[in-house]
Amino acid sequence: MPNNLKNIFNYRKLSAIFSKFKKVLSITIFSFLIITSFAHADTTKIEKATFAGGCFWCMESPFDEIKGVLSTTSGYTGGNVKNPTYQQVSNGKTGHTEAVEIKYDSNLVNYSQLLTIFWQNIDPTVKNRQFCDVGSQYRSGIYYHNETQKKLAEETKAKVEKQLKKPIFTEIKSVTTFYPAEDYHQDYYKKNPVLYKYYRYRCGRDQRLTEIWK
Image (cartoon, rainbow, N blue to C red; front, top):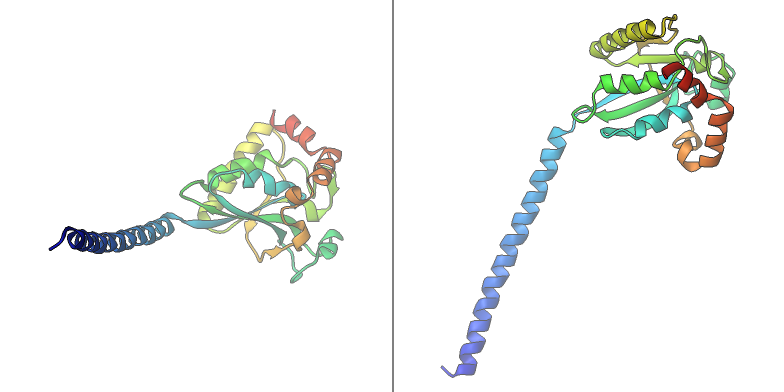
């Protein structure tokens, strides 16, 4: 066989081998990605926590910073009016309080850690108010989703009361229906950072938190 034909034959042979190798490699990579995806899904354990600490704008950001927290949603809970609006809740007659619902991966962050963040971001020594916001719609609360959360909430409340040496008015109740707030309330601190910071400062939130938890 002439050399040029041999070269063509060898080239085609190598091309066929390389083509098969690429196919095998592609299948291997694809399989790896699928297995990895399922493995990640299997190790993610999504749970919920529901807290009320006054203005829900101010309760999203502390939890969003935590590794393992998947989402925070501002909303209303604890009342007796279905699908309430912000205007309805604001008048204080619905029984609802402003709250945040947190979805988290309990393999990365546990409920006890979330409770610590919660307490450090509220004033538990006042009833039916938080900072400059007054009314039952701003009361603080822990709304547990299971008995383990209830037990931990009660234990931490007792510790906080002992630490601050004052009565603690934060309510601990079984979670009821959580109604997400209007879209413009979600991630308000990100969408309107200047107005958010101004409100937070004028409300004296950080100043009071420093006094309580120094």
